[in-house]
Image (cartoon, rainbow, N blue to C red):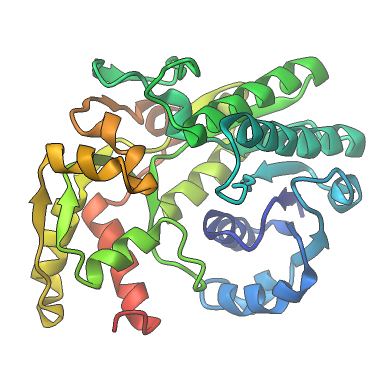
Length: 333
């Protein structure tokens, strides 16, 4: 039985990656900052993974911001699925957030080298494939974000820096690397760690005015499958794969929810672009959206579909499945 290491086992994406690998006959060991979360993670996974497969899951203690524990936790594994990314505390400068992102990659990759592992699949982000807002047309994996673009926020700069660091380390240590670049990741949550689904929860709770920002959506279940397909298929070696091409705006999502959940009595209207720009001066979370308001470019996932036979849910299916899970968890008041 092959064994993989998944970093950050308590995360939204990592939990689905773990489930997918377990359900396809792998042993999985995953990192946690504290083992106190282990039992809760197993209970959450039990909804999606049969007990016989779940028995092949183990945990070890390691923190992305520290080198300790990683190499020992990776002992005997056949590969690393590096999903986790240190997010900081929201108070860091751009330089500090970039350093945190770079150090996290270095800690994991150096541990893989020490453990004798060469195969790594890493979750990057479409933030590492973001042009300036005036670009039009279709972008492929060949496009890299320019970290000097003045439109970028600290998060996007940190993501492109992390992926660049990964490829530099792969070249230096002869590692067999594939990177996966998702867009806005939605889908059913396993726990109350909502991640980006917190945006959908706000819609379900009646957020009335919505910026007209097109989001390229990745279904977390499809994203997990793509990590496994990339790990398994030699054609993926040394490649980047974009993992989002289908677009919805938050207004589209709100109207979809109005139709499917009439009992919630949702109301939604578009927030004019000028109002979004004004509000962004006072609301930090909106600032990253401003360059996207007039976006005319889009990404293609043709490479993953052609190379790996990858398939996606429709974005409607994705956000509806996410909403149904949020409702089932009793989070809609």
